[in-house]
Length: 229
Image 1 (cartoon, rainbow, N blue to C red):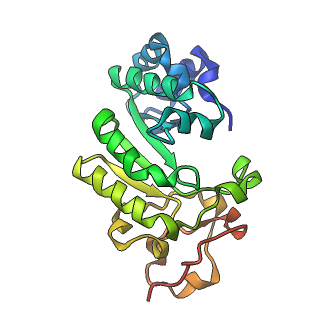
Image 2: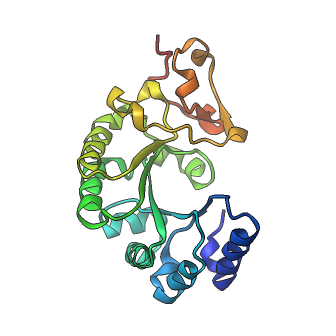
């Protein structure tokens, strides 16, 4: 939790120390990206020249007003886009993260088009299932949607990203609820300490390849959960 970029130059120092102490360890920083709208800050981080650094930045829509609504911060979209541009100008690796829920799924195809036309140079796109924790748990009735209901939009978006050869992954989804053509993009992305499987998974022949569930999935889960025979 929290926004690491609020550390300012202390974040730069931390990344430098990680480079010195653990030079072969990959570092993935989750940030909203807004602080990097300051080009000098993006430059400072780039100057560390960490050998394996990536920043994971959420972008929830191709529309500024929708992204700002999701994060509940006016002007967030513009700051985030400027941050991404500044980081890539400095050759810092960037992963775009999009959490799919009731407020974001409809624009998945348009979102993919936006990425291929405007942000083709990012290093990775992660399309993510909803984890029912924090504010998502508080607003479960407003945000939850069965993944089966947005497979059409997800398939269309992925086809667009594939055509543009953008490196794409699908996180936090079970194989039995994903369209078959998406299976090769599904990753085992849930941390082991909050990962579980249900009874139905015991006889599933692809369990070893499936990422399973968040522990919070006991609150709500897809109606399509079933073993693949």
